Image (cartoon, rainbow, N blue to C red; front, side):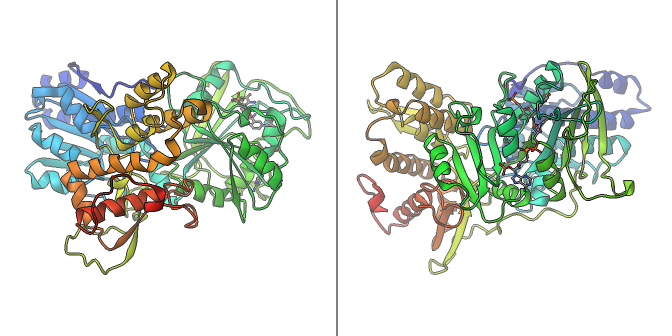
Length: 598
Ligand SMILES: NC(=O)C1=CN([C@@H]2O[C@H](COP(=O)(O)OP(=O)(O)OC[C@H]3O[C@@H](n4cnc5c(N)ncnc54)[C@H](OP(=O)(O)O)[C@@H]3O)[C@@H](O)[C@H]2O)C=CC1
Ligand SMILES: Nc1c(N[C@@H]2O[C@H](COP(=O)(O)O)[C@@H](O)[C@H]2O)[nH]c(=O)[nH]c1=O
């Protein structure tokens, strides 16, 4: 279970430290071991955010004093929350001075405010050890350069620190961000195929019955795997046979959405997956398949996305563009074979139960791959064996974690922020996720705003998203609505605020203020105006885009975003352009914004 703590402040003498101080002759070797141990520890705590930080990296930071004692730790909880380095120096307090900071990955300065770098510098850290450089080109090397420029000693594992133990430490850093590195390299989300099979290799009986093959303990483990994923995907036949729920029921943790892939759209009218009160479901299908049934599902709140060519690669490319980091495939053998053949599966988790069911036609975990000789078999890499209750869990990579040389090119071209840019130069700047070159324009960026409430008193909101989502329910005279506003206000991340606001709006439309549709643009405008007024560097970034069209590259949000093929209304982009014009003195601030005014 992932519990939010974000920071831990404690002092302990590590066993490695005892060794290192005991033997002076072996001092440099001991110091080296200490560096490796703390880099591994940084990777270990970074893993706490798996599922939450998507599609951004998992970051961990350990601060150790000159004498090798851990003074503070922190990890990035989710996108749009405080950087791991900020949390670690807060936890270490005065002990940061003269200490060493260990980072599993070079921080990425996505917002022009260098919060991680300045936290380390201001706290008086004198040395930084970096496990791996940031893999994205527009962020790669920036923080390291900046830290060195400010006089800190920066040692990068594998460059400045080389040895076998350092190689192991580096590997732990690659593994903790394997989904990110795979995603960035292959331009599809990191995909894990998970299945449960009997000892004789069956995933169901001949009749298609499959509950249960693996033990309760194994299935609990599956809930954890779900909690680390952005989405779980199954094929239409699994929906027809199993009527699954596909929820992460281990308590706490991230809640993935559910995806059904169906060519025929021959799906049941009633199914657990159509209950979207807690989690959303997206059905991806062939263009034109059973349109009337599509409408019926849409009326239940299920999202349907049509594809000209429905195959695992196209579908994964779409979810990559939608910002998904990792996907758990819990499908049967037919879809699994298709996904493996398309090259989109990166890792496999196979639960093997000590049971035999037999059956010549009972399905197996992977269908036809067209292989005829054993030499063609796919070998798993970095294989792990683990006993889970009575079952054996075998896991391994189908595709090795790519190394970071050469650097992975950024999706979007990086434009230098240049105030001399001519207003006549027209181009489109897309932004979406907070780590994009213009990611600070996203409502999920970690920039708190101060906004007046009904009585005129100012309150702080952790992000524009927190403010926007909560305002769906502001002023509604119902205790549940008031409670909802408070819960959203104190949501731990912008993503959680968004999830709470959206699901409450779906479940209890009666609690949404009656004037919301007419008001929402104005609410967003005011929040954005505040954000770009109080952060000078964000205002400069916005002004530097003068002459460019700003588009929120959300392929699914057709109101705030630009849509998949430019069919979206892009109101977020439009509001930003309006605010930019106001800052440039090209227009005055309107008293109230409506759709028509944009
Ligand atoms: N033990 C385990 O771990 C699991 C067992 N199972 C069992 O497996 C059986 C179902 O297996 P299976 O039919 O393979 O599973 P799936 O339903 O997961 O996959 C096949 C279905 O996927 C859809 N699909 C869409 N695009 C493609 C594509 N490009 N290639 C292939 N399929 C596509 C089709 O749906 P459509 O027909 O709607 O067009 C197709 O029938 C059930 O008995 C179930 O209980 C299932 C999951 C896990
Ligand atoms: N039968 C089987 C699995 N089957 C998978 O789990 C899905 C059901 O999930 P849920 O409805 O959330 O409990 C089912 O459709 C299939 O994808 N998984 C396992 O770990 N072990 C098992 O023995």
